[in-house]
Structures are given as structure tokens and as C-alpha cells.
Length: 225
Image 1 (cartoon, rainbow, N blue to C red):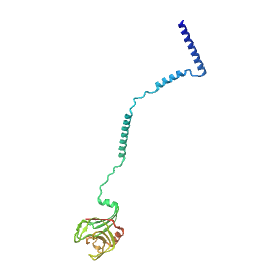
Image 2 (cartoon, rainbow, N blue to C red):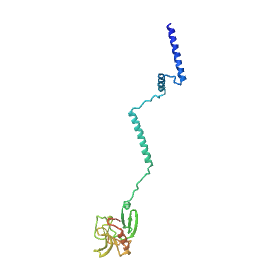
Image 3 (cartoon, rainbow, N blue to C red):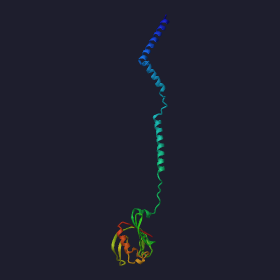
């Protein structure tokens, strides 16, 4: 008797659910109840959500990022250096360095020539005469008698109408560069190009005037032995 009751109850339940499903279908409503729908969605999410891989610790991540950054910086620096043109400073003489930065008068004793430089350009070349003795002394040495002084000097002052008391001779357009030594004009132009002076640097009148007008106090004078 109990079994019959259970069977009857199950059959009635199935008929009831079937009728509810049919009504829902005919009315266009979802057949699945909210509880069943929630369960199915949860199961779907569990199946479709990928299982996360092993997560690195924060320290490991920072170390990896730092290592990658170092590699990138190293490669970048290498590329930048590789793209830069190689620059080599060529050795230059002391005189070429001076010529680049100054107005310069160069007197070559062996050549008996005076060169006027502006930067790296030679503006004028003039015949001159230096000391007839051919004796060349550094700036800190001296002697009685005719001699040259070699080395680097500068124009101390300018005297348009200089007169030598010792030799009783005019020295027009005189540029004073050391002791009793001047660059000036001479009337003895036939000796220019050979050592013929008492220790000064002689020029013809037109060259001496041109140099005097161009030169300024403080300009460098280099006497080359």
C-alpha cells in the first residue's frame, strides 16, 4: 500500500512538472527555474575560467623586471655609442693652437720673414731684418752687444715716432715687445731679408705702417730662432 502511494505521488509530480513546462514553453518563458539556472551558470563558469598559473612573488617579479630593464639599457647604450662617429683629436703644434685663438705676429729668424696671423689665416708676409750677430737668447737672459731674443712676447706699447738715443736713428711705427727691442721701419731697405739690425726687427716703411695700424697693445709676438 505504501509503495502504491509513493508511485502515485511521483507520477502526479511528473505530470505537474510536465504541465508547467508546457505552459512555460507555450508562453515563451524560460523552462529552467532560477535555482537551476544559477547552478548551470556556476558550473559553466567553473569549466570555462582558466586555472591561473603559478604566480611569482613580488620580489621575483621585481627582479625579473630589473634584469630586463638592465638588458634594454645596455643594448640601447651600445646602439647609441655604435651610431656616434669616432672623434679623434689630432695632435697640433703649440703655434697652431695659439693661431686659432689670437692675433699673432710671428718673426722667423731663419727665414728673415714676419708673418701676420689672424686666427688660422696668414694675412701678410713681410721681409724683415733681425740681429746681425745671429745670437739668439731666451727672454730671461741678456748680454752686451747685438743679439736677438726668441720666445713668446706681447706688444707692450706703440710709438709712431720712436727715436733711438743709443744709435741716434729714427724708428718710425715702432712696436715695443721686449726690453730695448722693437719692430719698426728702417731706411736701410736694401738689407731686408738678411740679418742686419742691432737687435730690433726692421721692416720697410709701408709694411711697418700697415703693421702698426693693424696691431694692438697685447697682441702676441713670437720670435722663432
